[in-house]
Length: 341
Length: 291
Image 1 (cartoon, rainbow over the protein chains, first blue to last red):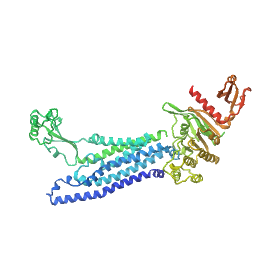
Image 2: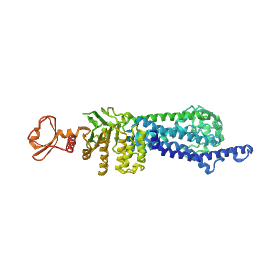
Image 3: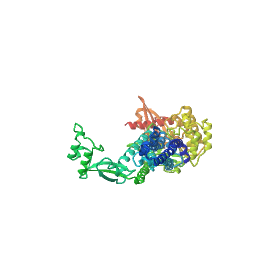
C-alpha cells in the first residue's frame, strides 16, 4: 500500500518539493545578504554615530524596490505555501477517488479500508509536516535580520509566518482539505471550503482569539504625545495604544464631547463647522488642551502582550491548531469508514 | 446442491426514505454464473455494493463466501468486483495497475494478467485513460480476476461497450469461469448477453427479488399457455400467472407451475425461452408498481 500511495501522489509531492526549493533559492541568498548588510550598518554606526541613516535603520535599510519585493514575497510565501498544500494535496486526495469511482477499485483489493485510509493520511500529513518544518526553519532563519531590526515578529502578519506556525498551518489545512474532500466528495467544493476555512481562521485568530491567550499588560501615562509609547517595551504586541481614560477611570474616545467643558473650549477653533463631526486632537500637539486634560485627571492607557510571551503564544496557538487537526483527522476516519462507497 | 456463495435474508437498503432494495432473499450456489437482471433502478447496483461491503445494509443480513461482507482484507481477498463506471486510475498505465494489484493483494497472479493483456493487444505502457472503452473494461476485468477471487461481481460491465468489445469481454469471463473455482454474478439489462454465459438468474424489479434460481429449473417450471379468454380464470391451484396478454378472443399466459401440478388439458402449452420469462417477471413488477 505504501508503494502505491507514493506512486499515486508522487507528482504532487515532487511539485511541492520544487516549490519549496524555489522559495529557498529566493530566501537563502537574500537572508545571508540582509544579515551582512545589517551587521555592516551596525558596525558603521558604532564608528560614526552621526551618519544620518543611523538614527533610523528601520527606514533606511532594505527599502529598495528589490528588497521590498523580497520582503513581500517572504511573507506571502509563508502565508501561501501551507494553504497550497491543503488545497492541492489535501482536497483532491480523497475527493478525486470518490469523483472518479476509484475508491471502489481500491476498497475491493485485499487491503482493509482502514489501512488504506491510514496510509493515505500518513503520507499526506507526513508530507505536510516535513514541508511545514522546512518552511518554518527557512523563514524563521531568514527573518532574524528583520526581527532584530524591527522587533515585529509578535505582530499579526508576522507572528503567523515564523516559529511553529507554518508547521501547524500546514498540518491543519491539509487535514481540512482531506476531511472536506471525504465529506463533499467533490474536489472543487472541498477546495473552496478549505480556502474559506483559511480566510476565516487567519482573520479570526489574529483579531479576536489570539489577543486573549493571556491577560494583556496594562500601562497608563499622563496625556500627551509620545507619553504612552515610552511605557510600551520593545517587541511587544500592542493591542491598545493610548486610549483616553477620564477621571472616573472610564475609557473614552478621543472625541470632544468626552472632554471637560473647559478643555472643549480650548479646541473650538479646530472644530469642524457643522458641529456633528468632532475634531480629533490625538497627537496634534495642541498643548493647552493636553494640559487641560491632565489637570482634569485624564490619562492614557495602553494594553500589550510583552515580547517574552512570544513562544508561549506560539505554543498555545499551534496547540489549538494541532487539536483541530486531530479532530479533522478523526472526522475523516468516520466519513470514510462509516459512509457508503 | 452445493454450498452457497451468496445467501441473503431480508436484505434491504434505504436511501433517505426510499428503499432501493427491500426484503431481498437470494441464494447463489458455488460455481454458478448468475445473471442479475432488472430494469434501471431495480436495485442491482445497490445489491452488489452491499455484497462487496462497499455499503452498509439498512436491514437484513447476508453471507458472502460464508462471511458477512466487511471492509477487512480477509473478506476482500475472496471477492472481485467491477463497478459500473469501470473505475481505473486514468493517468496510470496498465503495468502500473498491475503493480498496484501486486502491492494491494496477498494473492496476485501477475503472469496471468500480463499474458492476458498482451494476448488482447493492450499496450501496457499507455495511460489507461487513453485506451478504448473495451480495452479499459478488459483491464478492469483482468485486475479483478488476477486477485484470484472465489466470487466475482460485475456491475453492468458491458453496458457501454460496442458489440465486438462486448463479445471479447464475455469470452474473457467465460474463459475465466471455465478455468474453474469461480462463482460470478453479473448484472446487466442486456438479456441476450447474459443468456450466453450464465446458468443462474436473479430478477430484481422495484427493489424486490422476483426470481432467483438455476436457469434450467426456471425453464422447467414455466410454461406459456394459449387458450380462450374465458378459461383464463380457471387454472386451479399450483399455477401462478406471471403475465398475461390478450387479444379479442385469445389469452396468452406465462405461468409458473409448482412441482407435481397438472396443467388443465384444454390449454395449448408452449415452452417459453428465458428471455420471455424474465420479461414477464419485469412486466409483472411494473404492473404491480403502477397499481
